[in-house]
Image (cartoon, rainbow, N blue to C red; front, side, top):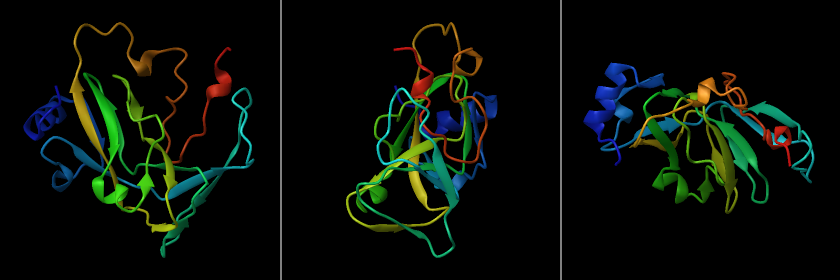
Amino acid sequence: MILSDTRILEEIEKGTIVIEPYDRKYLGTNSYDVHLGKYLATYKNRVLDAKQHNEIVHFEIPGEGFVLEPNTLYLGVTEEYTETHAHVPFLEGKSSTGRLGIDIHATAGKGDVGFCNTWTLEISCAQPVRIYAGMPIGQLIYFVVEGEIETFYNKKGNAKYNNRTVRPVESMMWKNEF
């Protein structure tokens, strides 16, 4: 079950959903719009290795915007810091973003109960497109969880994305054992 706007507001009141900064005008019928933060990143190397720490280079989106190019993975970040203590958050692209040929995530649209951070975006595009810091980039949808939660994400000892950040975070796949 997806939370409605009134349920999202109730959960914000209770503190089980936190959105900072929060602005009521970005609350949709059953979602909350999030915006592109001012930082992007790209990987230093063109060939990535899942067993190695692939380093990234951060840069700030200039006021005149930045042109995304196809065949390049950009890591972006939401302006909004969120906490979700009783629901499963899903981040999806806005239809207006998709109609510009922008994908905001390859596979990481689902958060975990207990996720407390900004969202790193896995941005790619179908054709060159100029983007801007602060533009609407996606929407958060909250699902009800069935059953008790044994370990919240922010309490897991092996959680790789718990450090609060305003910049995109590179893949931590290399920390897994395989």
